[in-house]
Structures are given as structure tokens and as C-alpha cells.
Image (cartoon, rainbow, N blue to C red; front, side, top):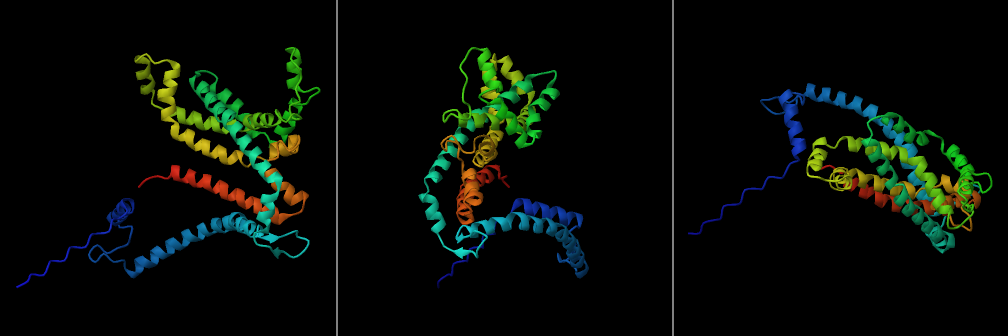
Length: 333
């Protein structure tokens, strides 16, 4: 006589602990409208929940419509234009990948990516370290910290074009401020924006001065959240200022440092105002960036299909950095 094996009990599917906990709390307070005896929602409760959700969806729909019209639609439209020959003077013509082939064949395409990468690298050397050092110094001060915070953040409040015109005067080879200072020190004057070797560095200094205020305040907020007991324990152990900075401060804010690093890479790859106003891409295309070349394709050469193809490639590259950013900032259940 054979004995049939007993079938194994089905393995319960894992549930989201946060969702299960939220549902348990709602049931405890009666917010789900379920009947405790049957576990079902009566018709009146379902109607009430539908009305409440409908009002919420109506409020949410306005934001979704605005976001779709002014964000999603331009993105989709721009990608489609990358596969078309568009001048807005004649009907659009579908050309497939021809715009991308012409783009890759343009010598300025590689130059623009190389210049943008160089600008990003210099911005990380100057613009990433300067706000953190400034925040550490301000955090150690006991008097006048509020006024110094305002001073650091003041350039951010200036319109970008005003900042560019101000720094154009600083860099002026004749009566400019920097060359006057060099003359006082008996040093030779420099062609800040006319030299292929100094032009990009000059643009990075402008961008760092104009944008470091926001990052500095973010670092100050992160430094303010570090427990003072850690510094007291380090001082009792005889740690120097450099050791406290390396073993206490940086480990405590390393997540903020990483996030600001990724955001700065994304931001510096979209640099446009500085080369457009100060150098125009010169000298000898030494400061032509991706967005400046995109501007030329669209509004100088009147080739919007080629400009859209380049914007699509930039969108893909920045999308990779954005995906990395979301991966690092994703919270665990």
C-alpha cells in the first residue's frame, strides 16, 4: 500500500512591511471603513473613500497637467525633432539617424565634449573644494557667522548676466581689476579671456564664485548636525584639527559630499552663460561647450534637428548621472 506524499504548504508571499504596518494602523483607527466582523468595506464606506480620493486626484491633476505640458512634452518633442529635418520655415521631414551621423562627423562636436569635460574637471577641483572649506571655516566661528553667511550667499542672488558683466570688467586687459593688482605687485598683465590656456580657468573661477553660496549653506547645515560629543572625544584623544576633519567631519558628511558631487557634475555639464557672455566660445574654440554649440546649431545655423539630436545625446548622458543620484538617495524599506 503506497502512501501519497503530503503536498507542501504554499509559501506565503512576502509583504511590504511599511505597507502592512500602514494598513494595520488604518484598520486600528477605522480609517479604512472596513467592517471588523467581515473585513469588507460597505457600500457607504466605498463611496466616501471614492469621494475623498477624487478630490485628492483633482488637486493633483493640476500639477500633473502643468508638469506634462512644460516638462514631459518638451522632452518628447525634442527627441522627435532629433530624427527630423526642421527649420520651421518648411514642413518637417523625417530623416532618421542622419542628424546623429552629421553630428558625430562635426569636428566641433568632439571639441565641445572635450571642453565641457575639462570645465567639469576644473570645477570639481575648485568649485567642489571651495564651498566645503568655506563651510568648515564658518562653522568654527563664534561671532559674525550670520553676516558671513549672507556675504557668501550674496553672489547667488545676483542675476547671472550682472555677474558676467562684473567679471568681464575684472578680466579686462586694460583697466581691469586683476591686471591692476598684478601691476601693483610688479607682475606682468595677463590676457585672461583671450588666452587659450587661461580662458577656461577664468570661466571656472566665475562659475565657482557665482554658485558656491548654495552649496556652502548645505554643508553648513550638515556640519551643524554632527554631534559635539564626537569632537570632544577626538580632542580628549589628542587629535589635531586635520585629524578631526579627516576622521570626524568628512565621515559624518560623506553622503552629502557625494550627492553634491553628482549634482555639480550634472550642473557643470550644462554650462552656457559663462562662455556665451564672456568668450563667445573663443579664443579659437577653446571654450566652446555642449550647450553653446547646441545654441549655434539652433539659432545661428537654423538647424533645429541637429540641435535636438545633440540635446538628446546630452539628455542620455545626464540621465545616467541622474539615475546614479536616485540610486544613492533611495531609501530602504
